[in-house]
Image (cartoon, rainbow, N blue to C red; front, side):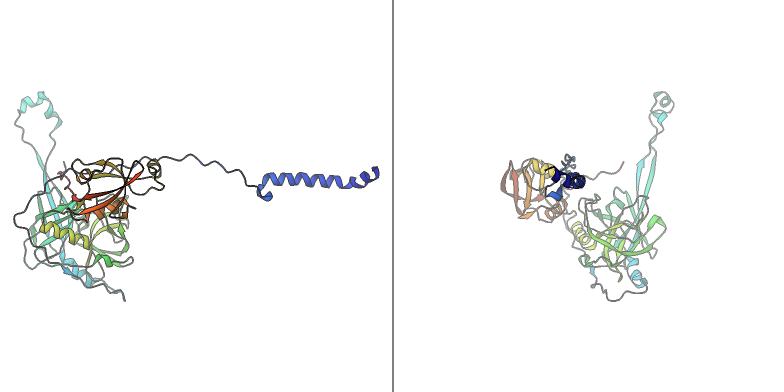
Length: 417
């Protein structure tokens, strides 16, 4: 036995070192032995505050017209040819530019009196018959003549609250304009001018607009006079911008600046594809991100404002709030789909159908709610008086409710102070 130990002595040190090395490797890399490392506990979830609920304006009775106007006749443009791009766009500009007008709106506001006049000591020298001082505020924008009857499309924010609106054509003629109607929720307005031999623009089918198409913006930026800028269509169907209640913008990188609002966005053949309405900018000037209201939507708003005096939209009468994962879990939903009803307008369509705050609206007309803004636009397209089946979750139970769509009340129009 001692002889055996003496024969193994030279191998004891390497064996010991090998065993220690194996222990260190297995502790450092447990996957070598087939064992899984203990999982790292996930960080606690961050609870985001729910977004502000969509506000619902009180019902405002629309004025009734004794004799409705006939719908304006619009000129439809032929489909755009994309086979060969022109070297110059002068022909397209010459075709469309005469129909783009400059709009000058003005309103009278009361000036603040001198602060000393609020002191009784100074008022005793002047009395109480101090005349109120007034000043004129002016703004500028653009518009587009779309019919021979003299109808002009522009933005609501260009003429909102104006006491007087003047329209100047490229041929030098000027005239005062009548406001036919406005739609603040789409930021569109319709004016009417009474002149002969008006130049009229043709309207393209805005559903055929493609990303990459050449686009030209015509307007009156900064009041320097009619100007044309060029770019391409950067995107279509832009929404969730927080600009209007109803958004479906065409995005372009053609330079749009203050004063271009209400002007024309045309294609390479001079047909109207959109009404320029807004820009995204950190400096106040163009940064290559401009937005236009599609021509098809503008034509629909035009017809309703001319024939009815207002835009009629479907309405449910609820304040809706989008679901986040935490809210969805609290309602027992596996995924954050649908919207939660945060409020119900008294005696509105939802109230009459029995909906309550806290209900989760999952589907409308058997179509799942995936985007609250898209659903809002879909409801607006439903004629008041029609019935819609709704899928609702209340207290963990799924209910089927039938609702009669109402007419969306007009927003309160307040003149800026």
